[in-house]
Amino acid sequence: FFLPRVSSMRWRWRPALFVVATTRLRATRRAASADSLASWLVIDGAGLMYRQFYGTPELSYEGQPTGAIVGVSKVLLKVAMPYVSAGRRVVWAMDSPTSWRTEVEETYKATRSKMPDALRAQTQPIREFARAFGAVIVGVEGQEADDVIATIVERHGDEGVDVLSDDKDMEQLVSPTVRLLRSGGKIVDERTVLETRGVEPRQIAAYLALTGDSSDNVRGVAGIGPKSAAKLLTQFDDIHSVLDRAATEADAKSLRTKMAKAHKPDVLAAYRLTCLDRACDLPPDYLRREDVDFPALEHLADKFGLRTFRSRLRAAESETLRAAGPELGDDLEDQA
Image 1: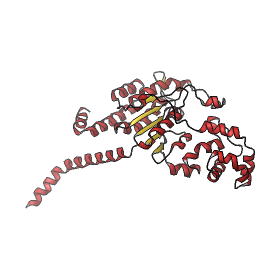
Image 2: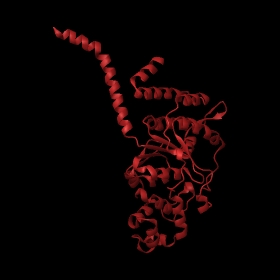
Image 3: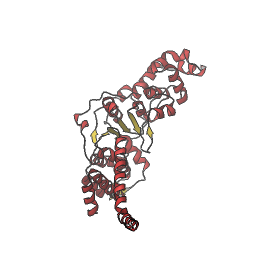
Image 4: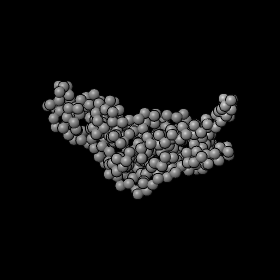
């Protein structure tokens, strides 16, 4: 005679049990996700702005260009929010107006066009979004964002650092505790670098000095492409050994011929350009740990007409408060 009662009880309590089970599952997933995050997320701010500017349709709101704002805000919501919510440090690295590299080579980045006015009009709003997402804005006079990132990795790499950047220069920073996050979602680790370039991360600067880097107007060695550079570095290990020995000892005759024509001072200058400066004088506040400022993000979303972003932000805020405690999450759902 217990069967009907048990059956009815199971039916009556099944929804509640489902909610409890679902809540526990979400909590478990959040914990597992948080455990997989590095202690630091460092964002190549300039690179992200440019990529989103050219990768997002031209948009505007009340006369203000917003294409890059829309693109960057989406990336920050998806990538940066989990780190801040998990108590990690997030840094937005920015370029200085000047770079020490132009003192080494006047033509460095000379082929790049000036920042479009439509993007310039969005740089300050984008930084406001980054701050509201909990990122600390860090720039150093005379240094590029790449060097700021390299210095943070040098100081805190052992703690675990994820770098959000699409710049191939950043691959020289990859290690067992340092990963690159591409804006498209790909994760670059040591194995990825080796499979893609044919060299180890520590050899990337030499690799770029040999092949050249058209995006930065860095001239390489004539006739040396990615495969040839990989072969040379596999045989000789570093740029100095390549320059000293490849012209006479390279396995392939064609490589010996090409390296015999290489002008050593030019290659070494290119190598200096491709090496990241890991000793920047960072301001003390780069160590700050900030929280997401949801009211500020909502204000910015309204100011620039980001309706879709605002609705996604609301969902993220609900999830963040739910993770903080069941009472806060329940209160938020009651107000919705």
